[in-house]
Length: 395
Image 1: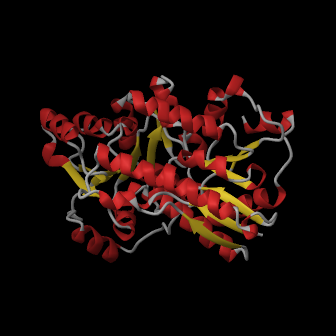
Image 2 (image 1 turned 90 degrees about the vertical axis):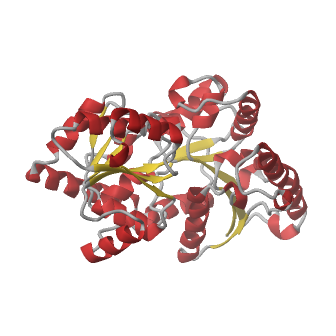
Image 3 (image 1 turned 180 degrees about the vertical axis):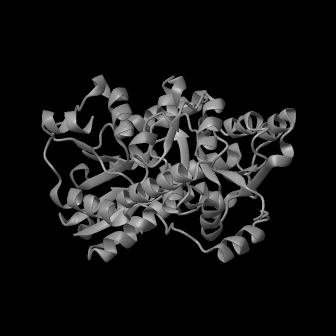
């Protein structure tokens, strides 16, 4: 068997998806299965003189992704070696579902990481992902193709449940479809780091190692609920004098204004797009990792923090409890007071030690080798249409 991994467009800079493609490629290779990565080339994208996000860049990227690359796929599929029955295809990102039109459905698996944008386009406010008029059409187009997939892997039961709910009549509609759950594995090495290395990495990133901080990892998206961490500072004002570190997207102007209005601008640290070593150091050095998302498809940062031995306070919204197991404290994402209360609970040494131990144990479930083994089993067996019992179990 040879697996062709369909990756993402380079200029989209969706780093998590690029890492996911490399993870599959390396995992398949270690398992003795040959693979290669195909991804859209940058052709029209080079015509832009700006690196900033813009409508022009977006449309140039669309031309590369959905005009040029489909033509390349069509041309390659005329090659006999790619039509052989021992060649499989794996689309890494559900956002690339339109490529299913050019690939053999009975030999193609697609991974669905979340349905935030699709649900937002359909008017589901709890996705916290609003869409423009054009975005609504684009997401419906993606859903139309995604619903054609014969073999689909969702990264959590919540994602699979939501996908079924927005599918035709909320059920399977193509004979022999098999949609199932395989949890993500780690897409990098996460673990404990010695204090000296932590100190060096934090200093390089401009973070004072002597100042205690709460960590958040993610983007400025509304669904990430970054404002709650600022509100935690307000609740903890008289009981804790630390900072909040936001790693990922550079803190945007609206959050800066909000922190300033509450008098906590000096308590905000922003580490934009940290490299892997810096990210691991931040997890290790953080007093607590806080993950108050309103909506997630899986939530990699939750298990990354657990693997680094950091206690986790997360949103009680699915799929966080599914992913974090009993190794995290779950709280209503609308209640900063509850997050603050959970944070103070972790001041108890015995309770903190217990949560760290449970987190480390839970993180073992997400060994990337387990994920790769499940993916290869799926590729090799191409399971028949699931029984009612199997579907009920997956729900």
